[in-house]
Each structure stands twice: as structure tokens, then as C-alpha cells.
Length: 340
Image: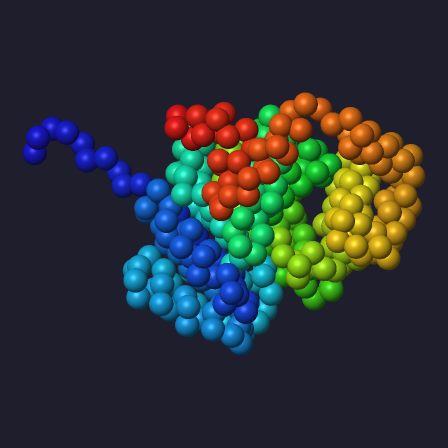
């Protein structure tokens, strides 16, 4: 005995990847998970009834890396797959990763540092995201200079805007997930899949704090297929999920519904889906006509006279680069923060 205590090993983090017919993207996704600078990982792929080569590709990674596990199940939907993955691990921290998204190598290490600093009350740490295309190239990194990082008790903010943005961003404390029952598979039975993530985040936010790593360390993939997702189903899912909060947070719920409908309206217009664009605009106006008009007017004004920082961010995106996205918008500032 030398009198020195042996430090505890790094806490185990389980990476849970629900996959359904993901053969075209699962290899890159697994490489980004395996390439994390935080090595104490268990990587669990839940193959949710795939009929393509997803399982074979995952099995190849399993043979190369003992941290990778493959669990097969009949198709039950993304919520059930995520819950299955959570139940398969003894880890105290869970990081969800969709089978077509990517992570920057620093993501988990920085999130684990943030949740340790935030303390036991913190149930979730999220990162900013960059949009990537089929070739892993960054489409948009957002306005890094003007983007707000929501932290602390954020329930009202989350009802107004799902600032976490996608299911591959957060790292969750497992105890916070189990306290609220995990992801809700019943939305699928109601024909309202889409907002399982938001429902879980809202439930956790009722009693727990959130923390942020304000860097674009998650690559959220947008493809032609994903752009044609069922907008009506997503809006219906959002209404079901936010309805329990309408009495306590009436303004946030109402405006949150308007903002979501307008987001889809803008997305569908850009994709040339004009009938869906009109439908989404009507949904926003039906919810709150005045708020819809004001929000559209502000959006148009920003396009006519964008702030200087937005122009700079767009100029920085002129050179398309491969993910990780932390080298794109505001490159010097972001790279400097990564070096901290």
C-alpha cells in the first residue's frame, strides 16, 4: 500500500442506437460512436426488425470492437427500441444516437464534464447540432454567435421551442429517464409518432435541470426522404405531447404550436411541397392568427436585412466540409473553444 487512493474509473456511458433498415448509414454512425474521445462506452444497436443488411454491418463492427452489441427484435418503433436499449445496460448515463446521425469525437467527453459540473439535479445535457446531407457534408451550422444555450429549469422554454432539436443530441442520466417511465411507445399506436423525444424531455424538465455544451457536436442528417416526412403526423404528435401542459403554460404551448407549424411550412416551401406548405400555414394561423402574422413578418424582415453575424456565418458555410461541424460557422471561435 502506498497510501494513495486509486481513482474511480470513468463512468460508463451506454450509446443506444435504434436501427431500422439503416444499412446505408449505420457504418458511418457506428464509426462516429466508436471514435469518441471518451472511451468507456457500451454501444448497443437495437435492430428493430430490419430486412436489409443492417445486422450484418453491425456484426462486423462487433467483431472489431468488443464495446459494440447487437440486439434483434421484431419491429416495435423507435420508442420501444430506445427503451429496450436502456434496459440492456448497467450504465448510469445514456446517449441516444439515431442510425443516420453522426457525432463529433469530443461530444460525449464534453457532455460528461458538463453533467458532472451541473450536479445530481441535472437530468440531461444537450449539444448544438449541425445539419448534414447524404455525404456527411455540413449543410448548415446555424447562427453560432446568436444562439442561446438554455440551461437550468427549462420546461417553459422547451414548450415554446424544442431547442434540443433531435434525438441524437442529449446525454441523459438514466435515473432521470426511469423516473418518468422512459420513451412513450403509445404514440405509435395512436398514429402520432414523432415527438417521443420531446415528451421525455418535458417530463424530465418538470423536476430536473438541463445543461448545454454550446458547440455543434451532433450531425443531424437531412435527406430527400426525411424531408418528405409526414408533417400532419408530427404536428398531431406535438399537440398530444404538449396538451397536458396547456393549463399551466398556456402561452408557451400556444406559441410553441405556432412556431412548429411555421417551421414545417418553411421547410416544405423550400422543398417545393407547396400543398403541405399551405396546410402548415393554415394550422399556424388557426392556432394563433396574430402570432403567425408577426412571426412571418419578422422572418421576412430578417431575409431582407439579415444581421451581419448571419451573413458571416453563411459566408463561412460557402466551403462545404465534412462533419465534424465544429470547424464551420465562426471557425476560429469554435475551434478555440474546442481546444479549451
